[in-house]
Length: 240
Image (cartoon, rainbow, N blue to C red; front, side, top):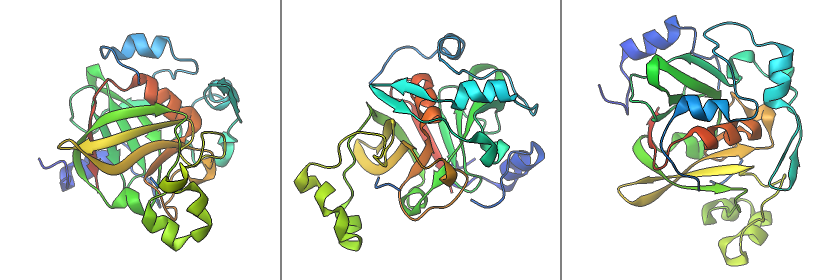
């Protein structure tokens, strides 16, 4: 099976599980052995087994409430204004990939981290133009907490007001308004930077949607959770 272009049976399986979504800003280092159970038990706001049930408001308040991280206070997410299928949740793995693999399904606006035992952590994502521009397999080569944001020259050409954040000017400093949010995961292929990113975003209302620019964005609370779970040098597969 070609992971770049999933076949009909894979799409059918997603649909049967109820995992497909309807419609779908940014330019786009921890380490250790992968142990999903141990990691999940040590993450604040970790999620219980879900498999199609309904998360309570109490659980969602823990997952998406205001948190302090790295000296910043991340605002709570008004989760009831987001389609519930995009909440962080543990599901039956629909990907068939080995544990520790990250799979981005750009059509359905889901990101999966495959776990042992046939499950996966699923996160809702928003996709921008750059998010559709790359597919295939790569490696999460580098990770950063509270990263700088440096818009590509092409974006600066389209939006001259961003010139103050160009590489020449040192980029945009980390913070709550930074388009890369609380974490960024940088994807490489054959040793080269793809310019494809998984990152946080303060724009919670863009989750599940196609937005004007950027790569693959998650709510800040979700990218923090994903960052702690992803194994070092994780393989990533992107479906278009």
